[in-house]
Image (cartoon, rainbow, N blue to C red):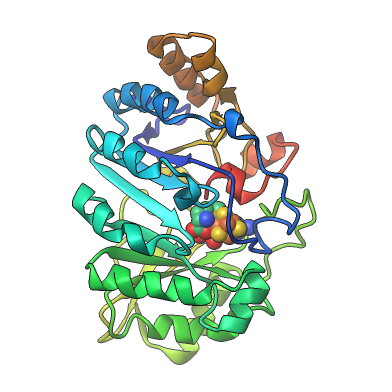
Length: 321
Ligand code: SAM
Ligand code: SF4
């Protein structure tokens, strides 16, 4: 069992399978993004060689993210192989290419999909993502619901950009059993330290929602990053994720693996180890596991401490959101 310096058990990995993306969300990356060379990415064989021993050490939850995971040509065989030894696999996707894969995902037993969508307006989608793919994403959303998948909508709340749509997003939960999660914007926009601060604290988001709805708090799931509510009489749920306020660090059970095999023990921290280099130099799984455990033993107490130790903020597409 993997444990960190603060006695937190680590059973959850977020794996970014690529840094490439078919959108250019302004809060995530610049238009001219320098993507990594393909040979720098972990191969499927390397991912499996890494995750099998981690699963034996207690990792039973895996989120596949990126970049856009469905840009990876060999994603489906990878998922099938991972599903053989990791019980719970979920995916975060922008939904542009996702729709055709939904029946296969369902057949594999992968039903938890986080779909990122920051606006319900086509023109605004184009402004935020710099690409005209709104219809494709909406078709994916419809199809996910038709196939009875467990859908969470990730909405990054940006002052002056989409805060007038909080009500419209919350209204989606009236008829559909989806969870709409409002995320505080974080500094990971791939533009160094250009972040001017988050003006929409999660409490401000909640206040705004309470102007339109009577919301009831739901019990906190253990290790959850979102604080969840339900609007009376509605089928779905709404949640706020204090990603910048970092109120959830105390129960963090996560480890991140970047597309190049970097290990991050905190979203706000730098890479503390590179497992791709270890694998390519022939290191044994026992040695790699031991290195990961050592990295966890030096883990920062929370995202604020990790941020103080970090020199550089990458794009979220490299960190793995
Ligand atoms: N491309 C996929 C997608 O967009 O769903 C997966 C990768 S994306 C980096 C994962 C999540 O990170 C998305 O929900 C996205 O909205 C979120 N994200 C990216 N940059 C962010 C930022 N600066 N602040 C808050 N959330 C961010
Ligand atoms: Fe791509 Fe996801 Fe980043 Fe948007 S948030 S640019 S979809 S990786």
